[in-house]
Amino acid sequence: MLEHLTVVKHPLVQHKLTIMRDKETSTNSFRRLLREISQLLAYEITREMEMTTTRIETPICAMDAPTIDGKKLALISILRAGNGLLDGVLELIPAARVGFVGLYRDPETLQPVQYYYKVPDLRERLTIALDPMLATGNSSAAAIDLLKKSGATNIRFMCLLAAPEGVARMKEAHPDVPIVTAAVDSHLNDHGYIVPGLGDAGDRMFGTK
Ligand code: URA
Image 1: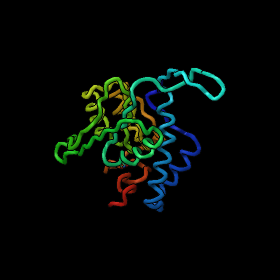
Image 2: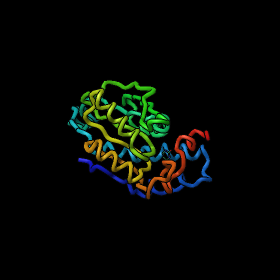
Image 3: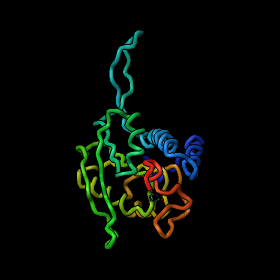
Image 4: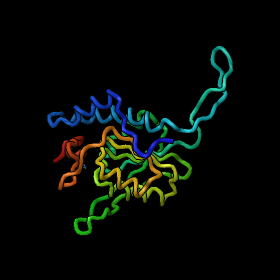
């Protein structure tokens, strides 16, 4: 079983993350590094997938060789920054089904409001939700609520950076959803940004402001 929180401390992940945090890093490099780290995080988050065997013939003899068991997994991008993780993970797991969740924060109630939702059949499927920044955790927890309503029972959450506030919020709302991240930073500032963080992940990967 994955722990509720796994911080991937591998030197390659940490080195790439440091370059991503640097405000001088270009959009182009930021995107490439995010794709690379997403594959290293995917390696970790899929570690305990169920396996079976299939009978094959090598050029030498027959063997029962290991394969992944069950339905194809589902990758859910939490828009828009989730798309930066999606590309790399899909490269590694090209047969995955893909869904999208769009949420914005209502400026008055501060509650997440859904503006887009399209997901594959999630029943009996390992479902990996993707969002680079786990900040307050409110929109992530709301996205997981939606996935559970769609029948997902085996969900994992991948992010690049997490704030302790977001980890705590997810643990309270969804203790059954393991989180895999590259780092847990110090805190959130008054604007809801992770400190020291890397700024707005969507702006940095798409070159917007
Ligand atoms: N979303 C971001 O893109 N960055 C943060 O620091 C927090 C939320």
